[in-house]
Length: 322
Figure 1 (tube, one colour):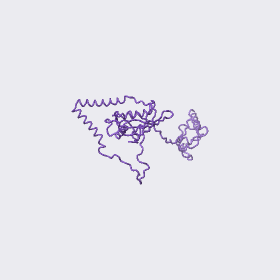
Figure 2: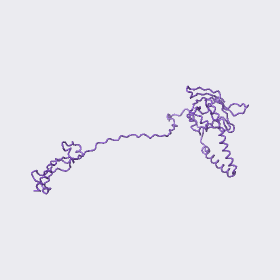
Figure 3: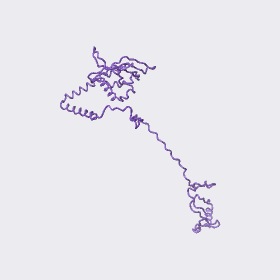
Figure 4: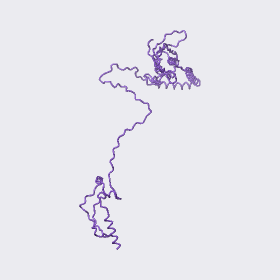
């Protein structure tokens, strides 16, 4: 009796199973015996399981994902799973990464070749070559430095303390001279004083190029002739050599600013100046030497944050007489 009751309970459980769906399993369907038969745990054998050829082949995963969702209570029953494909992903667009900000001030140099140059024509004005290549142009600087080093070592070796004292005296004299010529403060409360102080620094035996460069505006410190202190010094040494055949430390020149005219802007921060620059050998009282050059100068003076005036062009004016 206990076995019969258990069999009925198992048969009742089997009959209450939900109908099979093709999307739940991939195995072929099996048919159970008729409900009228009593099924025991030992009575069911492999011979009672019959394949149903009329059933369609198992559905693939893609077919299951493409089918409609089950309706009714099957969708809400527990322990039921559906295999679905993940949603399509959109391609990630190529985003151009912005370059990191840079504090660099580098700028590429302009092209030296004329972009409009035609290969079937020669220029009307051919370029000139002022300085040709020589071995001395390449070896001059290293030979001078090497000779100076060797000579200094030889002088110290044979001269001893006398040469050392001479070198010390020359260095101290050079520094003292520059201190002396820069003791006077360059007062430039007017544009005329700015022009006079600028050329006065050029009239020493050892010109004060540092002061001259400091009395210029930012734009005047970078021109076609010079772009730094070293170029500025080389430019004015070449101009002094052109004006005077003797070295400046032997025969210094004198620069005088005359016939000065000035016109201010309404804010009194800019001034258009015009003057005549007289270049002559440094003379003694009563010495009436003719000037080496008379230069007509036109310039722009700018009032700086310190209330002093600065020149906007530090080059030598164009000569109008000799």
